[in-house]
Length: 374
Image 1 (tube, rainbow, N blue to C red):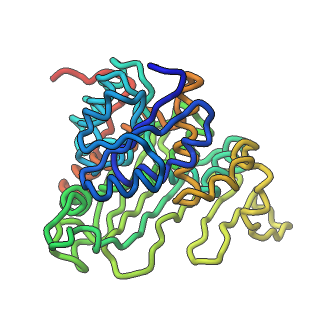
Image 2 (image 1 turned 60 degrees about the vertical axis):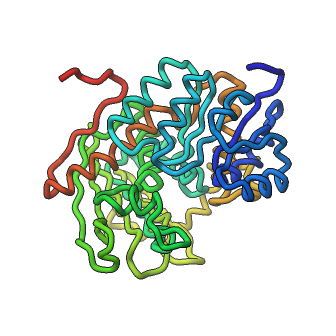
């Protein structure tokens, strides 16, 4: 680093939600903010006390040691690569890339740079998801073999600019068919399986859809289902629906293991529930509220829970910012590294190939190995 402080720059207004987590780490300064809209740039920089303001990403790179890339999806790889080539650490919003080619470009840039790259998948930090990961690590569910996640979030209003023209979401999220925005659902579930087996990875994906009914302007099916077959033969089901007329349900998850099951809440005010143990004829056990197991949350997570409420997504953005900064300062692996980022992203990209082929299984590249020359 160029000073006794870790200087961080934020590109895109969305990245400001990580501020409280970044500023909770001693030795960190958020010194720069980059935004195309001059009015937003000035207002947000002033409101959050960020001294340097930029409208050009490359110019900001000259005055920081690390960047948060919170710009539209098609900019994630180009800007991350620019930053890595300039010797900067990167925290990137989801998804990591918009093509398999970009996935390999990003992998090469990270490995060449030797810098920290982390994916900002904040749904991995929702309290229930953290707790289930810890319970899985401790073996309470036995051996997990089936998981599911659902991101049901009607966001049709976000697909166009104020003047009615289509924006980047219309192109990259609903402008192609498949599970185009699946890391919120897939990331936490993959972490559960990896808590039981760190070597677990996705082998193939299969994707099918319902067809277009609600919003036929876009080629994206109302609902898509992506089945991820793991290398071990286990299965994950991901549902994506950003178009249907219904209430939001962006964070439903479930996990089935040999010794128990977890079912997240489906309606406001309800609690997720857990059922543990083998079925025995003489026993009549009941579901238990997930909260009964809160004492199993990692101590560090519990200590930071109150402070995390200052940020969005159930405190997830706080934890993302804080753990990114801490991984740099301690020179330790980031919690969601380049291999997680590429695998979770590639699952969605390969689902696009599967759905147009009628649901054929598509292999997921193993990003731990270099690409095979054709």
